[in-house]
Length: 136
Length: 61
Image 1 (cartoon, helix red, strand yellow):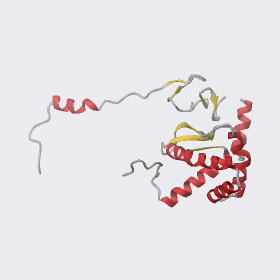
Image 2 (image 1 turned 90 degrees about the vertical axis):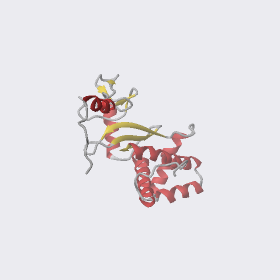
Image 3 (image 1 turned 45 degrees about the vertical axis):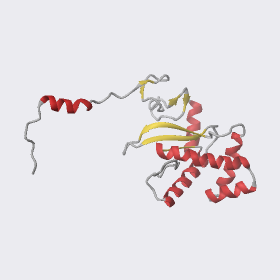
Image 4 (image 1 turned 90 degrees about the horizontal axis):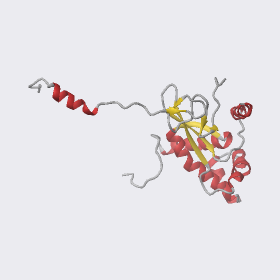
């Protein structure tokens, strides 16, 4: 029985699930906001918030733990220098999940995941979103 | 093979279907653009949620 066992399995094996979460967190750190299914979005909150907590510690040890998970120096640097400083006055709740609605094609419920304190993403889409948001 | 002995009466059939009713979907008007929206979802027409532009919608003007 899964009594008191937190977390979602998402119909994946442990290894598949681990890589899925890693990819989602990396995408979130890089892009600031990402779209995914409701279930993945809700699961992503748990792990993304842990990464932010590591980033807030800011120690070399925390950096190494973050690198062990993310496997990218560039993203670790971005997490520690650009993402987490925004959360200094906040103790948890670093990510926000907003529901968008059913996806065309398979009608899967899609959500938007973003950091609660807004920053700038490093992809074209984020720049477009920023540009059109300011012009609107 | 086992077969029904009697035709199902209208009463029996209707009682069986008493729990089959569908419910209409909940909706309300978007406070930003007035389009119908599903509660707790970002407005598909204007991209607003809780008074904030969350996503940009392509065909918006």
